[in-house]
Image 1: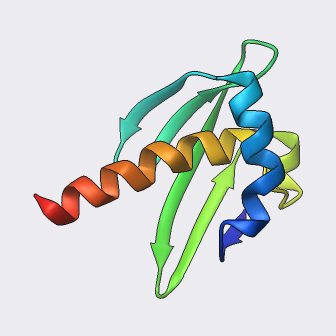
Image 2: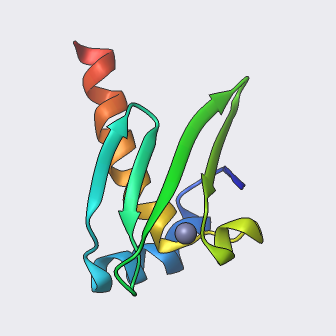
Length: 88
Ligand SMILES: [Zn+2]
């Protein structure tokens, strides 16, 4: 799990996410299933705890608290949905 603080920390993972163009499945608001490079799916959870935005991914990198491209891919969908919710 990592705490989202800004776009800077996501930069490397964003580049990989753009190259990989993975599939993100919507499970429910805050929970997504993201396809890994080997065709397997990882569950990514995005949640807000107090003022902290926490993102966790089941993959090896995610378990080591690294920002992985699965998390970034899920986040781009999550942020879009969160915006829609606010304007709805
Ligand atoms: Zn991951």
